[in-house]
Amino acid sequence: PAPAPAPAPVPVPAPAPAPAPSPAPAPAQVEVDSLVTAEEVEIVQQLKKNIREEAKAARAEAAAKAAATRAAAKAEAAKAKAEAAEAEAAERAAKKAAAKEATEDAKEAAEMKALEQELSEAAKKQATMKKAAEQKAAKAAEKEAAAKEKAEAK
Image 1 (tube, rainbow, N blue to C red):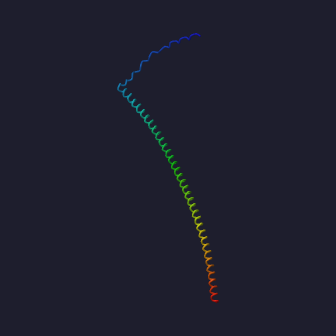
Image 2 (tube, rainbow, N blue to C red):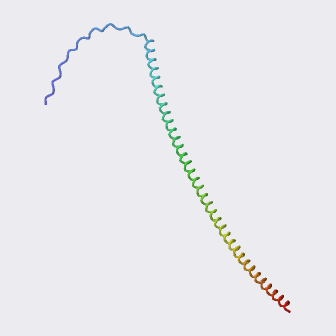
Image 3 (cartoon, rainbow, N blue to C red):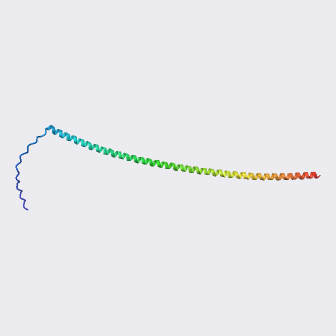
């Protein structure tokens, strides 16, 4: 392969005459402009920093509120659970008391029945004894009447 021919030199036009120079700013003016720019940059950076801090604080506040809400929900659930347990315990106690009362009532009923039976037996015995006494009295009266009759007959 043949080497590429070197490009021909491009003629450089002569520099055009420079436009009239604008009045150069005074050195003090340049410093003020750069200071204002530095101040503005600092202000913008401070604003960005403030925005980041506010966003961070807002996130932290939202997280705290969410945690508080979760804690309140847990506390409410625990309270409901405790109330349910308390109601269940009260119900068990009421059932136990009712069962105890029923047992006592049954005992009292059995005692009453036993007493009634004893009274009935005693009344029967008394009636039997009264009958026997009446029979004895009647026999004694008959004997006495017979004895009077005999005595009168003599």
